[in-house]
Image (cartoon, rainbow, N blue to C red; front, side):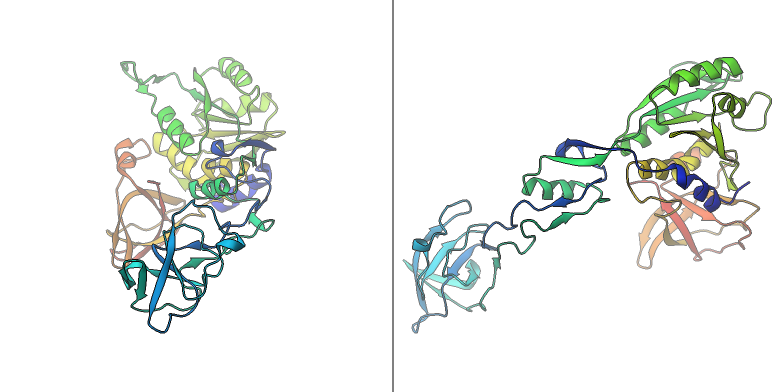
Length: 401
């Protein structure tokens, strides 16, 4: 068995980001930029009022009263030279409206007194106050977002403000999902003695949806080498990554490893020192990858969170890694000592004055869907670690975002 960090290092050379392609901006949410972007215009495009009030030209007149030259709303045109605000004058102005030439500050309406067509400021602000200067956020032709940027909703809003309609992102991987096992039946079926409903597909489909990825489902292959090979061969056509659940342990009906060898795949690793998930397999054929996930539900989940998810994110251009989003926390209950493998324990987490508190859930084994179904976090117990008391520090991965 490989230590998990070493298994990840062996996998990394196979995770080159996929080829870039152009897509519409609104189809790029959650993707990673393959090419940097340059600003197309100044932001803001001109000097704008930061609040509702009055634009002022220079210091207050001797008597403290500014004549009001008019009113300007957001969207009103007019920053030409003949629209210049004369010294000692005020212009009623709304948030987001263009500040006229000659105005050098804006005073909030709540700090003014008006009488008819004149205004007095109860406190005259300093020059430059409450004005959003042209280009203060970004200047035209300046770097906007570098390659490698995750296109969050806020990033898409920035691109929209620049009129950028298309972006270059890394192509999302084409995926296929193969289930194996004579005992597996669809969730809609009534299991007979010795049979189990498929829980893997719903978990993986939901997790893939979080990444904005679709998957081609290949169905359930029986535990027969020829049947499995025919199904995998079909599933690998036009596929970048194949996820296979089951068939990777040491049983007499576990055929995935020899079948992949016959299909020309080279094993990257088979067996990782984690619990659950020890039989995890990764293999490659050229640019194609296969992840062989163990058959137990908790093993599928842990293998996904630790290896498959960050691998897919790297193929899409992200700088994801093994356990790289883990956080420090405090245990809300004691944990036993580490064993020969790193253990990943389901837990719930909450906030306290001192930071996140993790309450471990003791699963009955890698088949315990209830424990993992209740979990919002995964706590790591490193191999050989001493037992940890309530209040001890821990490291954890959030599962609820």
